[in-house]
Image (tube, rainbow, N blue to C red; front, side):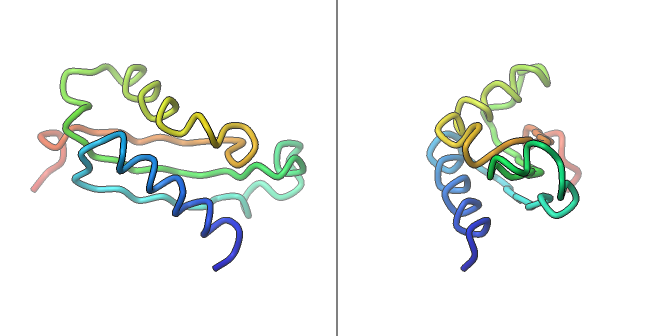
Length: 94
């Protein structure tokens, strides 16, 4: 398992602790940002698709804040940039 795969597993664990997940997908997009100043610091670029009941009734900003709070121990050392797509279960088509 490479370094970013290990990071993703740690992120997954923290998100599972923080939320009742219906769906979670974490993609490492660091390769798309090679040469970027943030990449030089060792922090990666990640995209998260997350579905959790805790997002019901929350604005997009509040959802992002909740995800950032769950991953705070990883920012900025492991996460330089994060793209978040957060939904409540009822917002996802069956």
